[in-house]
Amino acid sequence: MSDHRWLEEGMVALGFVAAVLSAVLSSVATLVQARGARDMGHRRARVWYVGGLALDLVGWAMSAYALRYLPVFAVQAIVASQVALTVIGAHVLSTARAGRYQIAAAAACVAGLGVVAASGSTGDAPVDASVVDTVLVVALAAMAIAIPVAVRTGSPDGRAAIAGLAFGCVAVAVRSLHQRLDELSELVRQPAAYAIPAFAAIGAVMFALALRRGGASAVAAIVVGLEMLAAGALGMALLGDGIRPGWQAPCAIGVLVAVAALGALARTGDRVGWHAGSHGP
Image 1: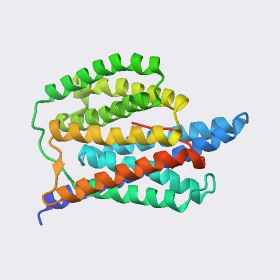
Image 2: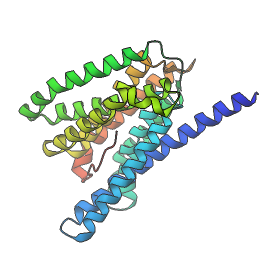
Image 3: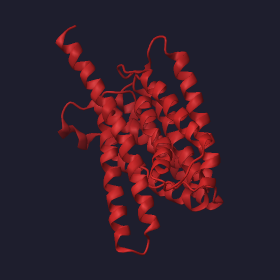
Image 4: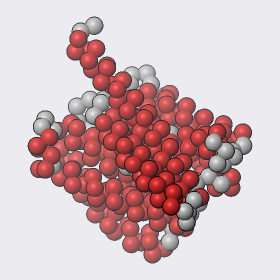
């Protein structure tokens, strides 16, 4: 095997490690911020919250690094496992007891998402970078129209859906920048670079608004589910992401298992007292 091949596989492995670290850090951030919520009114509550936010930011940086070497849907699948990891972590730490059904659903979610992540492959973008920029601008415009409607109707599902789509667009923009940039100095001339903070802000605000009206577990499940599916579809259509030969069926089964498990967690999570903390793009 050539040195170039070894280096390429090594970078892919580092990407997987970074994505896993992102999921773990985001899960820990949720647990830390949930602790801060329980200590509300005490000085240490702010320390817990700031600590959770710092972990969230580091987790997002890890996912952004992973997007340099892995397809969008693979990274999003790994990061989406944070919901299940949070359920398991809360159970282990006794902050929220989960039954066997919930633990089984969380384990199935992680397994399904793991298969999805393992099935991914990367390739050259089939369209020009300007096409990606146009799609991102259209997505921003569509969200600008949808946001007032979702806020006016008070639908938590609609707000969560917009948040998930916004976070998914962040991943697409980051992956696109990795593909098109040779030097960091070129970043200021890329429309996708300015789309990232816009989508991140929309996602964060709509996620918070969704939590005001909806159950935390249901909202989180909608957000991460749409974030994975929408970003994955855009990555395949615009960025050259694909599925490894022979992995089409396992990938489809993994998606179905993961979505079903997320749905199960959404239906039962709030009844056993789980809480959604922070959510990074």
